[in-house]
View 1 (cartoon, one colour):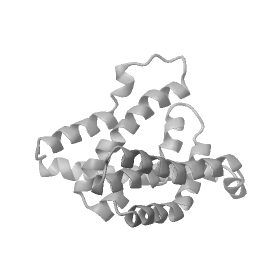
View 2 (cartoon, one colour; view 1 turned 90 degrees about the horizontal axis):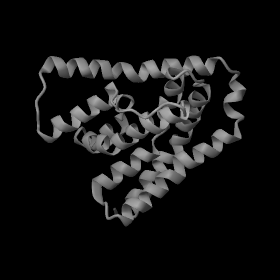
View 3 (cartoon, one colour; view 1 turned 45 degrees about the horizontal axis):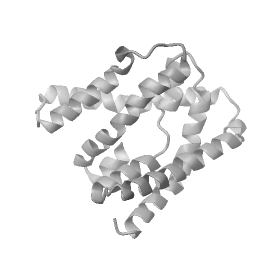
Length: 193
């Protein structure tokens, strides 16, 4: 989320959290089911710390609840640990495979074309047709152009699966994002939205 905050400011994070919230619900429902098809869908599996905190953040923002400074500092410090921790896990998973194997999967390249180019284009068109304009439009389309989150590596590992393929996809997605993010921003800014 640092890119969105850096480009649009801190207030844009609220809009992004609202957009990403439904994606996170899908991860903890559909994602759990993919890793364990025999598992029953229960509210407990959806209500995890991440989603609970996201819901609280939305509620606090809507009602302009001011948190004590110590709570804000603590959550900021804990949040700052998450990305490096996930990167360490992804790096550890990737280190187990030969470097050459990172770049030889045609499947991952096809996935990255879909993730980094086709999904932003699809969302851009759908949101435009739905009448979404301005900063909200730019934020939502921009979020879809960001590299794959490290959840692709962390989620399978946490559920007893192999996160190596996900780590590899995150790495390649980040490389693709060097091209896709500027292209998406160029497209958005030049069509006058």
